[in-house]
Image (cartoon, rainbow, N blue to C red):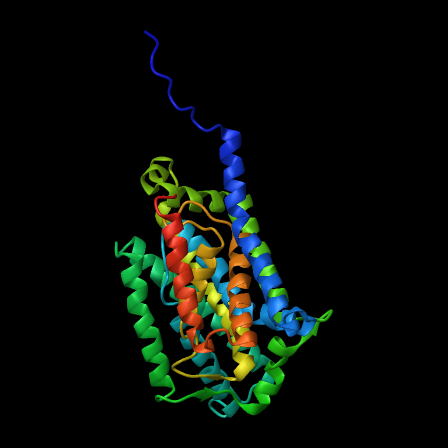
Length: 337
């Protein structure tokens, strides 16, 4: 007797086609949203509104690029909003202190702003390194580590600000302002920085051994160890990269308002994670694309912009919309690696 016919396994070409089709989902959604926004409000399609959306996207987008590496490796970071708040407060505290003079010495305003920017990047890297060490060497779950530091970072900022706000000196604010408000070839500086960070992230993820190791660890950490990949080192570097991205985003954000309060960066972690998962990165790790994250960040900003322009629902429900998006994408991704 002949064996019963079995269902043919999908060919490699069919799988690649399905994967590409899935990857195009965020882009198709973004295009559909842009069409809907244009139909709902004429102001949506203006150049000024486009620049506004992209500028506001840049902060979360830069953080989301770093978050992409962490999530692909199988980790998570819930503290990025609180980390950004503490970095912003520390920058302002340092710059105001130097402007007032230390030990009778005065500093040039440009040197003070430069030192503030350096402090932001250093603190971001150090905080990320601390997360990586606690997770890898301390053998503590990323969720627990970053949930704990979320409270620590925001509490320290609240203490520095004495429960109020830390406000940047007016003279320094005028000098620092162009970092956010200036444009190059008609495009605001934050957008250029976002593009550079995204391009660098895509290059690292897709064209370097480190990027391949990140994906291998997320796919199967035990197999990655058998393959002689330095799993702990790679994980630590992913968190350091995320911390530096938070520092870069904070450097761009501080001149926007010139102050830091206990609510600065509130829910940024939600927006960053939402951008990553909407962009197609698997929550279980092992697979993801930086370009998808960029599209996801823009898509969420477009949703918020449409809600602001049309008043379909209250703007206070923007975070609720993002939460629903995360849950929906996680539902779609269930079982996928």
